[in-house]
Length: 370
Image (cartoon, rainbow, N blue to C red; front, side):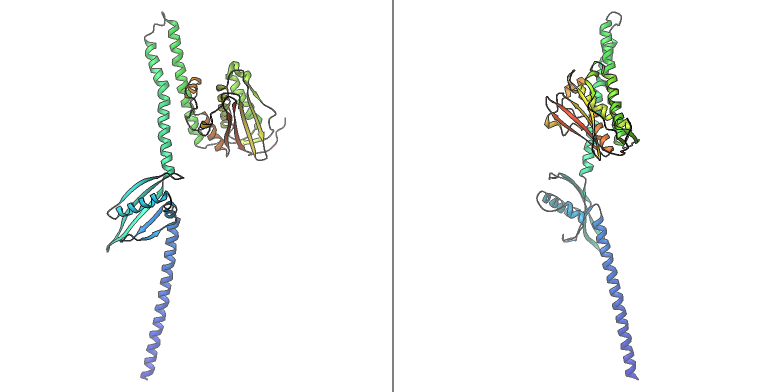
């Protein structure tokens, strides 16, 4: 009887041990699943995360941190900066920004903070973030504001000076001087107005708001040419459409596309001598339409071709100011083309002329009857 009782107790202890073992295995499996989930979550973070324990040994580095900080070549600077930031973070939250010259050039933000619990320190956590684009956009904004201030200051300053002079002139005794000053005031006011209009256009276009409609390619070309011809005066004879125009249509914002073409045509006429032709044409491929403006003007130096589509960039500032340019026309053209899923390119030779091409994807290919 006693032996049977001992056997039953042993069997009960064994069953209990098996149950505890199963619970332990289940808890361990749950813990492993939680760790894997946590690791996957860390790797999915758009921020780099590095954790070290109290003796400085690294216990975790997620995928983004490994990508941003790889101790090879110039990235050794990032690794050293991260180590320093982690060390400083043991005493309290700290951070720094470092510039890596690359290539590619990058700007990294590093921040560290101690990990603590009721039992004391658990180590330090650092967050690494690539802020290259943010810093680039900040620089663009600062440059833009500085350029706008500079460009507006010139005509406004001229208007103030001319107005002061005009106030001291007697219109009755010095009508020629009075009229000349008044015309200069009007010219500078018009220049400031054009700059403001271009800024508003650029802001609207960069917003990407398009009013698309199916428009025949020939209407875009002829409409743009007619707009320039109406204001070109004697030079209207220099402007013409070159060759037959495609019969296809484009699904575009006609106002934006015509405005971009007008900018290119007016630039071509400004930077070419009277009597030299400015030709506007269009070509099509199965998936693209090219709107082309060609001149035989002064051309663009090779060093400037990569920058001419930047806002306020001028190849020849003196000539641009003389012709009344705001420095925004080509930036507007590029943004219009990209808004439509296309781009703009230039082929130019100094002293021989330039060819600008707006490349647009075909949005509708219905043929339009002649």
